[in-house]
Length: 67
Image (tube, rainbow, N blue to C red; front, side, top):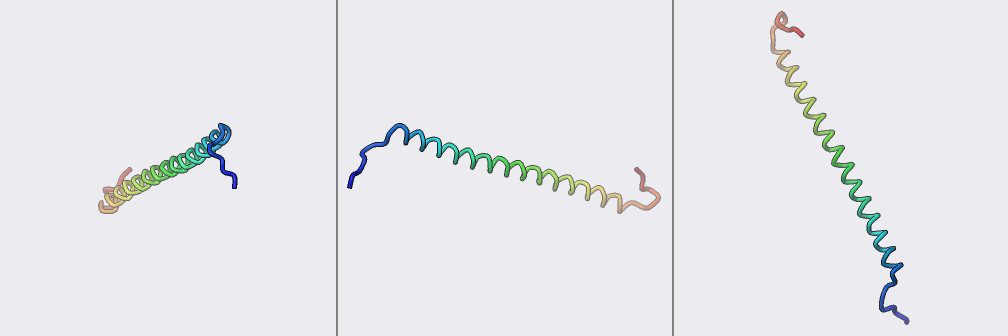
């Protein structure tokens, strides 16, 4: 069998290109995921605050409820 003892510059460049594409794709997936997690967290917080205000209004007598 014939074994090569080194790699050519073209092989090294292809390896670097493939590795960088893989790293950038993983980074973009994590960045988008983090954005959606933050968006969901903000929505949950807004819903929680709205529910707290609704509970305060529900506990008031009917004649004291006003906008």
